[in-house]
Length: 206
Image 1 (tube, helix red, strand yellow):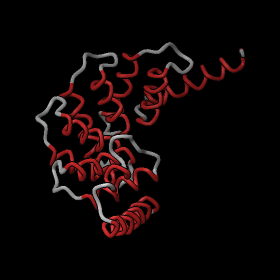
Image 2 (image 1 turned 90 degrees about the vertical axis):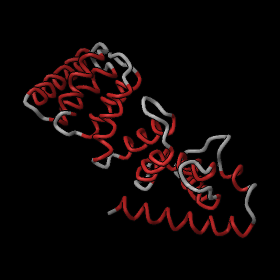
Image 3 (image 1 turned 180 degrees about the vertical axis):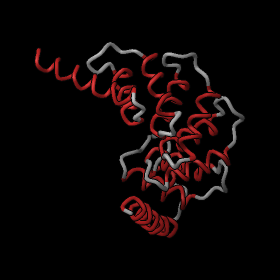
């Protein structure tokens, strides 16, 4: 137990030294240590400090984490404007999770006017990078006709892909949308799903 504790302290000191010298990856690691309370008391203020250092250097993962701190009010007053700013910075770098989060903020109208077209745009970018939650959200938008003409075939295809990737919810899923489709439409949607899935997997492997 004593040896394990010392090893953690040594690792923390090494990481802190690298972070203090400007290494963004180490700064992000330090922030997560303080956020989770891994071997140290949980400290959201320290987490924010290190996330911000890395985020200011353009570290997309830290920008996303900093946005979440503002979105949920961890260690700071909840501030949707700051959350949007940092989500967008990461999203513009192609960070899929931030793209999905930005889509959700536009879809829900969190701190910004509700805009389904913008939500659809960001969900789609995220979904095409393999983010399963965004794939499900995109399917829901096709199913409801939010920000895009209603298209059950595309809704079915994206619900299917999201399910393959482990995401399915009771009120919006393959069963609910398939009840509104003919057998021919379902067959076309299954073929479309395979085509989209293979395209996404090809991009991820590249």
